[in-house]
Length: 239
Image (cartoon, rainbow, N blue to C red; front, top):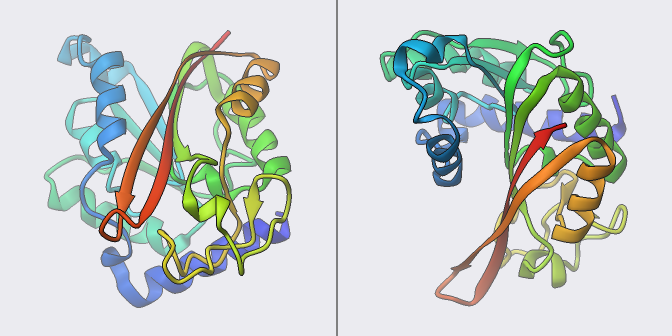
């Protein structure tokens, strides 16, 4: 486990230790719901239990509960032991069967080769620096079945938080050592925080054996339109 991953784990263990389930939102990410709708909601409900969907960096299951509620077989992986401990209570609150949850790193996914139909990443793999993210992409490819989907919702480099990042420092060309400017979105997240560029992420994914079917920008303003943030949605398929 790299030093950056250890930093991320320690930050989230502290956050969940202090805030419990309030360390994470309780509702699923909107772009994940859109991905699920366009990819899977035409599948008859009685066939969905055969579809294995893994969320890397699942936290306390704010996304996984809706995946399970829609009838898919939900799996979650997170570095934070406390988040994994809290996850079943969130699933229970929404009246769905608990997901299969495991503690571990997305650079060493504890699932067999070709065991997943889909892997989703919602603002989790951005905690990896460039080298660790490349390892993660290879791990995602390993656990996906041929034709399986990888969806990522991740920060983009057009964000003010990246372009005006001082006093944070660059670890590599796209990763900050945290978000330290107090007026920045995600201020206080003091662990590696990577911002992707559409061209570079496409090149990496295609080099590692994925076909990128879509990259879209979601541009949002914060702090009374003083702060702008770019989110990227990336759809890809294992070739």
